[in-house]
Image (cartoon, rainbow, N blue to C red; front, side, top):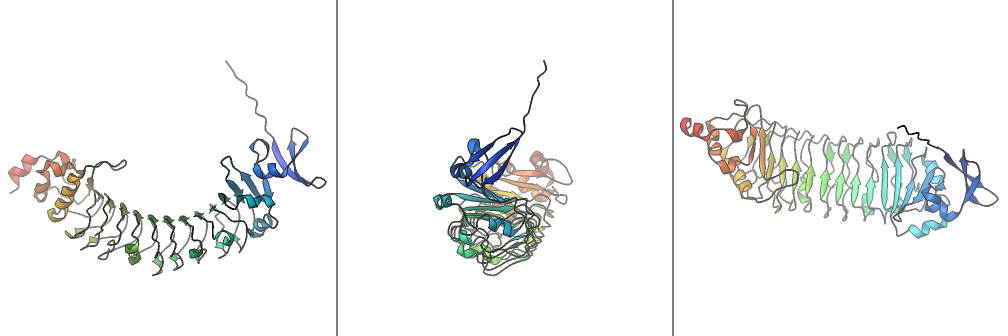
Length: 404
């Protein structure tokens, strides 16, 4: 049986009817001119069609009552400003509502001060604009009392925008991923409501000594894939921090007390760094939550038995592809005993576990303490280089007979 499908395509062009003062819609291919009222213009038109708030921006009231402002067709900052020189009076109805700005995949080179007149946004998504390199300090000034989400991913920003971020006291989410930033200024501080801060995949080599201070609510910090060579000391002050992403930085050392103030910590990723040694108290944290620690694909060769000192031991540890040649009993036995006592199963990581599979790791008599303890061995997942078998399948009788 054959089916024939006929697809009718038409497009809508908006023009201004001077005689009526209404936005007129021409349906090319269907013929006729149907005027839009002011209400339809701002409510998405008839049947949910897009409405125009002033060329080149488009404004649509979505089904959930949120106002969407899309300026992705703008070519210059002046184009954006021209859309809001005389904003319709209906904007007053959205002063206390959710108003989203979307500016994506445009040809914009920058945004000037007060580009949006007095229109304030709760959410700003200016991203994937590969030529956008400049944001004036007051580009979003009208949103300083309302802005909650600032998403500036995948642009070409090299100087930290909006240096005086602290005026945006309602900010909860900030993303500057995939830009060309080289430093984080002092102005990225004193933001009481910020929960999420992400500046990954940039060129960061330093953080100002006052950056990331006074962020009492920050729970998620992502600085991965940058050029940081040391752990910023102010990280220890982020008492609400739950997740810390530092992988892909050329960090070589972990100073003593680096995490001593992280009372809420649940996840630390230091994989693909240049850390060689985990020293005394370098991983000490007072967190009461079960937490995950990754040093995967690092040149680590030494783990201090007091690395966690009097702090909380992690429930999941990833040491795959490191430089470890043996499993030091003084370090690993207390860690595995802690794991064995945990009656938890994580959705992603499963039961508490140590992952270790290294080319240099030898399964010799030095790990008899582990192989002959089934309880601890059940929390280890990995292989030895010389036997190429799962460590859980090693024969304890062999180690009892040949290891003294």
